[in-house]
Image (cartoon, rainbow, N blue to C red; front, top):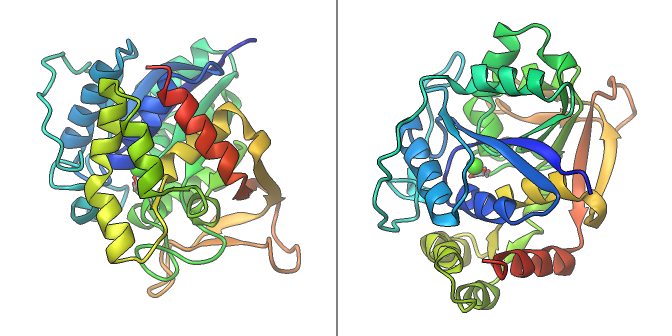
Amino acid sequence: MKKIPVIIDCDPGVDDTAALLLAHQMPELEILAVTTVAGNVSVDKTTINAMRVRKASGAGYPVFSGAEHPMFREPVTASGVHGEDGFGGVEMEIPDDEIPAEKAWDAMYRIAKEQKGELTIVATGPMTNLSIALSKYKELPQLVKRIVIMGGAAIGGNVTPAAEFNIYVDPEAADMLFQSGIPVYMCGLDVTMKAYITPEELEKVGALGSPQAKLFHDVFQNLQKKALEEWEQPGVALHDPVAVMYAADDSIFETHHVGIRVETKGEITLGKTVTDLYSDKQMEHNAYIVMDVDRDAFLKKVMDLMAKY
Ligand code: RIB
Ligand code: CA
């Protein structure tokens, strides 16, 4: 089977950490690079965390650091959810590897050219790096096969009632993506909230026994407590693992071809992903929205992949 060449653009981040651990074990994917962006925490911390996960998983991909703040706005972080260090409060030494001077957006362009139009970019943080790459390299849309994002929602939000975090942090960047002409597959809250892991299932991952399974288990402990006690959810939503799982194999998901644009001017609705999925089909159908998942199949994949460590 020909592997899918991917770049994972992320803001680790507890669920980004899980996504990277899982992606490393996915036979369908060849991770050519991980790029980091300011999001859950500052970009210096997301970069350290990406390097921590690379070392912990035994991966060899390069990590390129990216944008320190959104295109036109002040940074918004989620340290209250992911911890001050963005690593769920898990103590882990900072790898002493050198961070390449090449910036995330330049690496994206270089690798897209090398892959001759076959590259998939999976974005699980604010899409600032992608929008910088699109602004700097006009021919990028002809070089990227598809972009799979964790972000947005047809209905609802988690920062405001209208907006999901990755879109809310940099709405202009997200809207640039949807207008770029590159096929964008949006794994929003509609599907990621269904892809939750219960405390019992999380304990089963931890019980697999490898250091990587323990890391997966440990990084989620604080977020799980919040999800159960504050948000009254049945388990922790595996937001970012959905995006990498979708990129590898979309067969357990439900996808619709729709129009999607982002509200960048609103006050109450700032960062809302507007889609015509539930209305008259008045928009240009420029994207794909993922609305459902076979949760049992998804969780089985999580367990099987983590058992490979
Ligand atoms: O809304 C969830 C998204 O925001 C996830 O990617 C999480 O890591 C945060 O970045
Ligand atoms: Ca993320």
